[in-house]
Image (cartoon, rainbow, N blue to C red; front, top):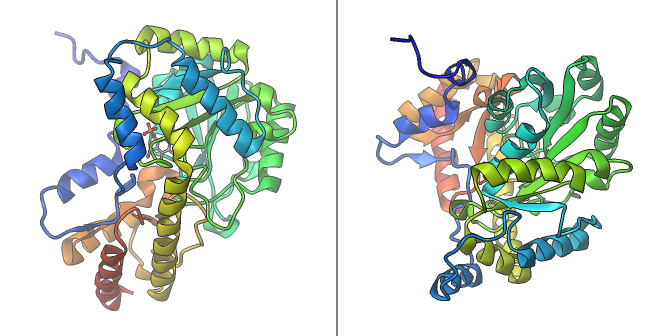
Length: 387
Ligand SMILES: Cc1ncc(COP(=O)(O)O)c(C=O)c1O
């Protein structure tokens, strides 16, 4: 018998640091979880109704591999309205099973075995593993709180080899809440241009930005032709369970993504596509309402954490705060384990998000205001003992 039937590149994938931790949380009572990476809101009613209606109308079949033309047209218009992009709905947009699939398609479509992808770290847990699954090699480049967790153009450039194929970025960022600064993104763009790299830009949190501007990467000079823009409905519209997202790219790149999608997925869920179309048409006031509530919680948690001596840079996007836990002298895993054990507050160790995340923990504010208040009270007792 073979030692393992698993392919080597799969067998070597590490289990997600988040899952491991939350398997423990699930066995405990009275835990306040700041570990959640999804909206606590239920999908807004008009979007729910559209999904239900679609089922009742008997729309239970496959759609075009690309996704329905109506949704792609709505997406093209939506992105044009927000950012001035111009993607042809007929050939430059594919509807996917969440950003997760869009990411998989993008990486699988562009990577030859052994090609490298630069990934600023800390980052969404799936990025490095998805690069590995697609046959590539993730090169994680640390970012730092002192620089607002922005990618460091010099460090990116220094990591480029003849095998580098792409840069994978995600702003607003999970786990830091950092929002892309235009000057830095222009520098990233110029590196991509100079070294002929593709940029995969995950903009899933694009509408969850507070007092800041969202820079849509393909709108930077020269970037449209080398960017795969991926985005979705999970976070902006509180639709994680619907599994719906999209990828946009010039037709000669998109055709590669479509091939992979065609043979692995066929088409994104039909019900979710109809619901997503209504999200784009009627969702804006609901998004604004949820954003205002996240903003209120953001102010509470950031000032609360800083007050406790857990230094937190102001996150301008998504729904995460990423405090430094240096004041406790603990490493991030010990901090998270002890906080859970002693005060029943769950946060995610920053190192789960890559080498750049060490010494920090991720606190999600996609949870009720009152629960955040209680979590801060419990953290205050913890800090009195350990600060
Ligand atoms: C940055 C980022 N990208 C992608 C995803 C996955 O999104 P989806 O639900 O659309 O697959 C997440 C989910 O946490 C995320 O934080």
